Image (tube, rainbow, N blue to C red):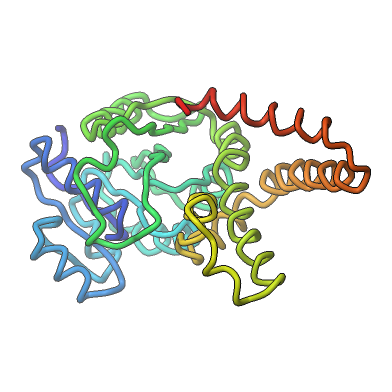
Length: 284
């Protein structure tokens, strides 16, 4: 691996799992963690996730060959402002955020000369967060979307792809804009709907949610995700998420109309269409 020092800013589930995965695959350089919570950083060092740490963004990136933004996307702009004068020439900046075009628009003007940015988005995670949920195998077999721009440095691109392949991830290339529309539909919309579904049940009666079984738990598991993270994602990918929300609203309106008109055969056809599409994702 062509890096002597990797700095990960944001030592949570994804950042910690990335550090563990790279160490498991033989990274022998210095792994530096940067975050706001010193107690968390100390614990991460004790657990062998990182080799050293800093609560200062600027201090943490000094001499780093690869810098990974693994905090919430809403913090990226401020972080880059803090580190831009301290990144060495030739370094690569990447991220793990699930929004790309909006993030790039914010941080690209801040990038120092001689530093390459290559966007990345590992499609992996858990409903629980933090270093104790981290695992070296989190990305094994998972997809990781890499989002270069037209002028992205090819060498930097190849190195970032190589990093994710080392973790066991299967990489794919998309433009930032394509990425954001795709994941507005398959990731961001489901999270918003999961939060809304729980709230809708609470609005029926705030005492009945506890009666839900496995089906409800499966459907709403992602509503356990960190709300700060999803607030920022919704803010940065507002337009694409609105497109998908309007599609969802139209679908719900159609279902309501079928109920009102007692069109049970048509309703079954809608269910069948969804079931068949869902079976195409993975074996039932």
